[in-house]
Length: 280
Image (cartoon, rainbow, N blue to C red; front, side):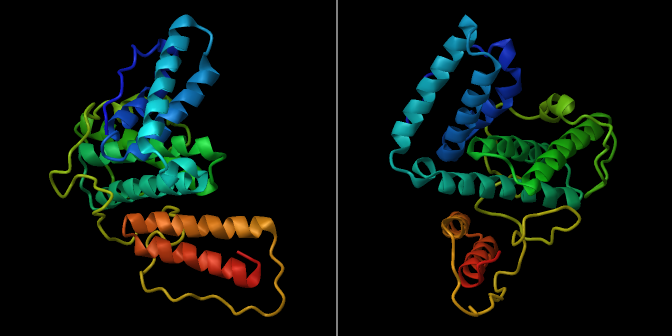
C-alpha cells in the first residue's frame, strides 16, 4: 500500500485523538481497514472539537486527504463499502486484541506488549462508535481494558507486581483522565510479531476467559451443536429481523477471516434461531 502524505503537527485541541491517529499509522500495513476507520474516527471527533481555528482546519483538511487516499487504495473492499462488514471487522479485531491481553494478564505475564494490547483494544472500541452507539459489552470492555492498561503500567513503573486477572475497577479512579499513563510506555512504532508474547490476530492463544463479560461465543467450543428449535408454524419476520440475521452472518464471515470458528458458529446459530423462531 502506497505511503500517505504526512500530517501537520497535531493541534493542542486534538490531544484526545492523538493515540487513535498513532494506532492508524501502526496499522497502515498491518490492517489498512483498521487504519482507515481510526482516521475516520479522528476526523469525526476533530470536527466536533474544533473545525474553525485555522490550524485545526488545516489539520483536518490533510487528514481528509489521507482518508480519501486510503479509500481509493482499498477500492471495493467490503469492509469499507458496507458498514456492517466494517463494524464486524473492527469488533472482531478489537476483541481478539483484548483476549490476547486478558490471557497474558491472567497468566501473570506482564509486559509492554500486553499493556499496549489492552490500551489499543480500548481505542479501537472508541473507533467502533463511527457506526453508532456501543453495545453494553463493548462499553464494559473499553472501561476494563483502559483501566487494566493504566493499572499494570503504574504497577510496573513503581516496581510493584500487578494482581493478575479481574480485580475490580476502582470506581473512584477516573480511567479517562489516566489514559496518558496507560499509553506512556507504548512504543511509537508498530510492534513486529517477533515472539510468542507479541499480539498477532491470526495466531491467538486458546484459553478459558471468565470473570469479565466476554461476548457470547468468544470462547465457546468450536463443535458446539446448533441448539435451534424447529419452526413451529408460520413465522412472520420483519425487515428488522432480516437485517439482524444478515448482520450475524456478516459477523460470522469476518470471524472466519481470522479462523475464529467458535465466534463464527455462535453468530450463525443466532441467525438461524432468529430466522426459524422470530426471536433472538
